[in-house]
Length: 268
Image 1 (cartoon, rainbow, N blue to C red):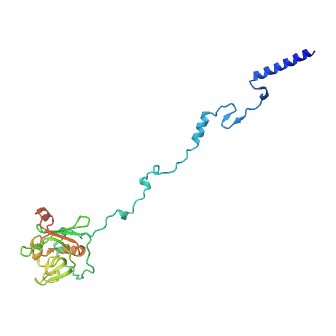
Image 2 (cartoon, rainbow, N blue to C red):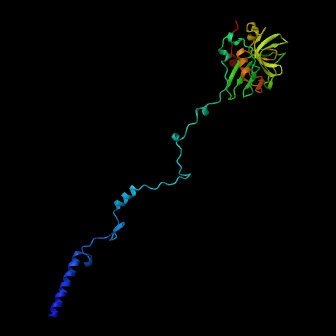
Image 3 (cartoon, helix red, strand yellow):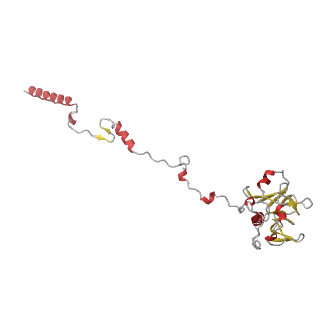
């Protein structure tokens, strides 16, 4: 009887064991849910590769701190333009017109105003050249451009205009008298001593008393040493070329084309 009972119990145990082996699960875990661990399953399997790629793509990389090597290079749009005034050259007084474009009447005119300069201009970079050979005065502006160029009269052989380098003196006179020669000229500007730039000559301080020969002699060596000019040219120097400006008086090569380009209208 006992033997039969033991045999039955043994057979039952064998049957239960066989049933567990067929299900693939340990008998005590049969039917229990599989636990999960962050990032992987309980069986050591990692998450799917495509899930890792999606996670990496959806997370932006951290922004690196700017260093001198990684600082963005400025573009034209990011640079502010300087004010227009900073791009403009300093203004330079210009002659009202080159005398070659004026009429005879304008070149010898007297506007009747006898007001002396309230303030004599000071040196500001002008350079005046007197070409004794071609009888031409050229005024160079501070930037090197020609501000004025005109035929003039220089001293004759027995009273020559002195050659050399000078600085403009301080004497200016609107309509002055030559005591020695009893005649007048407009717009005097001292070169040195008794040598001046000035206009053509007049018998009286009146434009109607022009000595026409002094106009016709522009471009020749016939003066007593001063440098004669038309009225507008003498006025321009008088008002613009300051005391202390350099004046170079010298002989140069003959230049017929230059003289031709500065030809003045004939006196009536």
